Image 1 (spheres, one colour):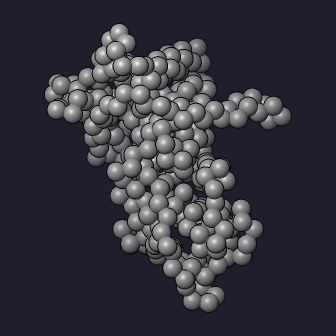
Image 2 (tube, helix red, strand yellow):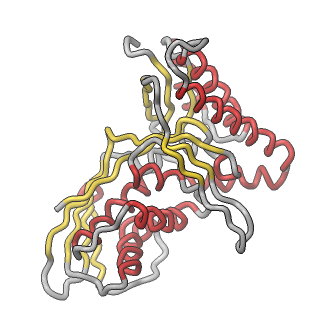
Image 3 (cartoon, helix red, strand yellow):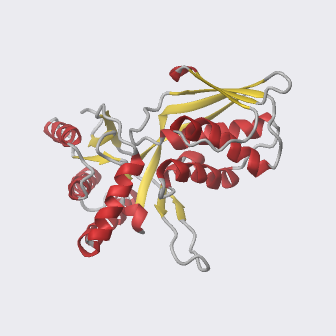
Length: 305
């Protein structure tokens, strides 16, 4: 038995989405996490194998370790068992991934989704996407502190979404807005890896600190990124033959979004260089995607480019 989960790309709205603005994200199905489930010996508990990283974890009882390996591999299993309210089964889960770690492609959420799904399948109580999504978000919270919720949503449902984080008080909380995103006119994106890892929680925390120090200026940047995201959705959903070309409009919005992310201090020399190189080679627009200061750049290109 096997479960899977894709990577993801944020097209528009990263960082601003944490502060109440919309974002657009799509699954990146070319890179994936797979989890294979096999029965294990009686009393052995759950064993998680990650051969790509030469890691073997034996989980016999619940623990509260605080380290990256536990958060990534063991915590999703514990979340799943808690949600199902069952004792630990005897099962071996082998997890493999082609998603680069700490690169803004949703590696952590994809691993969590595949592992939690694997536990449900192993005990013949599979999770629906609606029950899985908040569990993956709980894992993301442990990874990133205050995640937007966009990674888990795109990866769990594996479809493009227009996302806006919920807000309000503890007693009058408005839920997240999750709308399926209709791509009326297909377009081509090039994804380029900067070669630098950058944990998302660090850049999210740093941008939050910028906002607390200067809420008027940083809030205005968030608002402009939100406006760009809304314009991008309208552009992608426009009917064929409407004024202006999709590539021209969308490319300009990508370039402006990247410039604003630079002002939020989450770009890097490598990402800026990749964006410049892509534009020089004929891309209509380019921007960083994800947490920034590493990870990936995306460029809007015609197929012939």
